[in-house]
Amino acid sequence: MAQTTGIINSSSIRVFLGTTDDSEVVIDHVTECSISLTTDMRDITTKTSAGFKEILPGLKSASMSVSGLFAEDATNGYNQLVDHQLANEKLFVVFTNTGSGATANTGDEQFDVEGYISSLEQTAGVEDNVGFSMTIEVTGTVVREVIA
Amino acid sequence: MKVTIQKPYNKNGWKWPAGKVVDVSNKFAAKLKKGGYLDKPEKKETKKIKE
Image (cartoon, rainbow over all chains, first blue to last red; front, side, top):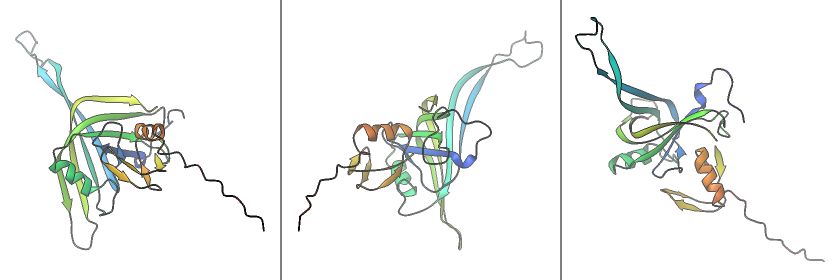
């Protein structure tokens, strides 16, 4: 399959995770997901900077946010996520484009990272869906790779 | 990608019976295929009894 052309439908972006590398399963009932990469900047401004701030890139970091709906019988949902958090388990996470949902879009690119759940919240209002939201802090290298 | 597990899988923190449909990463799908978990079990030939 070739790389997808045009603007991608955001519903095609899915998050898979597991406690072993290359054993990731999709997080069920996700409504929103995002990944954020940050590069801290080192201030190298000196008296010879002619009055303008000068910087160089420093530490890089990444985090991922996922929100979804709670289902007791999910294959990989809140119940599994809270177990991972309470056990301080390292997670292997793939943030990818699954196209129509049946097969991975080979030729497109995906994130393949490792991290820990830093926050996990379950929400329950009145006559509404029970939901959850989670943040994963990435540890180590952020890999951006072509889906093979 | 969605795959159907053809024989019980009890590894890497997952415990699934045969017939379970799971949506897995492309690399996990390759691993499952390599391990024979996505191959349909061969059907045993049944002898037809002539009447």
